[in-house]
Length: 160
Picture 1 (cartoon, rainbow, N blue to C red):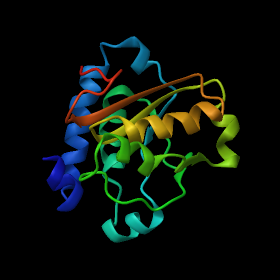
Picture 2: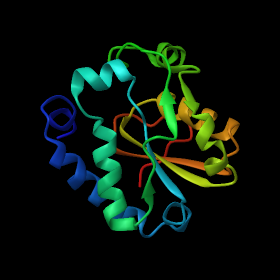
Picture 3: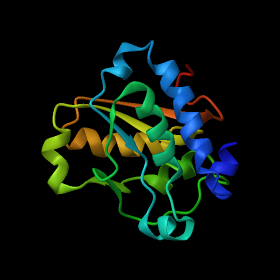
Picture 4: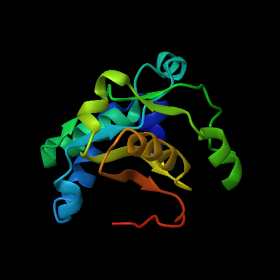
C-alpha cells in the first residue's frame, strides 16, 4: 500500500492510512495534544519529479481524525539526498544529517510547541531524527514522530 502511495500516485491511500494512524493516536494524549502535524518534506527536485509528497496525504488523514493542524511550510529539506532504501544504518544517518531546517519566518510558530512529524515509513529513524533535531534547534518543546509503516525497530522507536 505504501509503495503504491509513494510510486503509483495512489494518494487516496495516504489519506486512508492517515485516518487509521489518527484513530490510534486518539488514545495517546501526548500525541493528540500536539500543536502541529509536520509531514517530512521532500527536496524540491524530488517533489517536482513525483508531483506530490506522500507524507502530506498521510498527515491530512491524521488531521481529519485528530483535528491537529497540518503545517507543510515550516520545515524544509535543503539538500537533495539519495534514496534511503538501499542504505545501511550508518549510511542512512549520514545521508540525512543536517538536511532539514525550519524556515526563518516560522521560527516563532515552532517555539515552545509540540510537533508531530509524519513520515510514510520509519526504518531506522534517521530521517525523523534529523528533522526532529532541526525542530528542537528552533525551539520546539516536544517532537514526536509517526508513520504509516514501520520496517524495523530502531533504538527508541515504538510501535503503537
